[in-house]
Amino acid sequence: MLFLFLFNGQHFNFGGIFSPTIAWLFVLPLAAGLTIGSREAVFWTVASIAAIALLYFIDSYGIYQGPGVPKRIEAILDFILASFLILIFGILLVTGIERHRILEARLAYSIKLQKNETETAQILANAASVANEEIEFERAAEDCLGILCKSQRWAVGHLWLVQEG
Image (cartoon, rainbow, N blue to C red; front, top):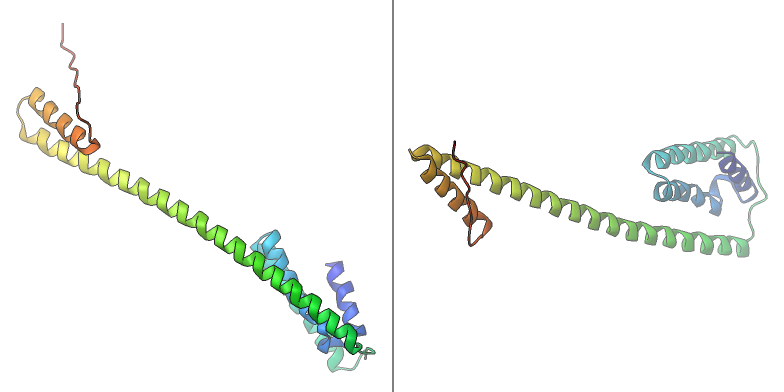
């Protein structure tokens, strides 16, 4: 935070609210959002807006009039700012693509789990229906095993029954 206000003090030397370096105050929340997280990005956005409001207030009431910035230094500062912004947006693009890829993988996994759950529910429903139709346990068990083998694409299924005694 101290850095922000020290940096804000530099704007007075380069023309106050009309300083070419004021755009750096918009870069700070972007950098915080990329490196730390969204809560910090919101904090730095509010802090940057407060710093710009302070500059505007000081310029509006003529509290301080800076000497201005020479044209050749202004061009260098504009180039550095443009380069930094291009770098920031490149990083945003790359991280956005990576986040999109991760979300797609999570969605595919979720769909696969849902499909498995749906298939399991269908197998259970079919087995329950067959079991309710059959009177003999062995015949119902054989039909249920057939449903399970067919759904899992098994060529063979074995059912072991334990006999009493």
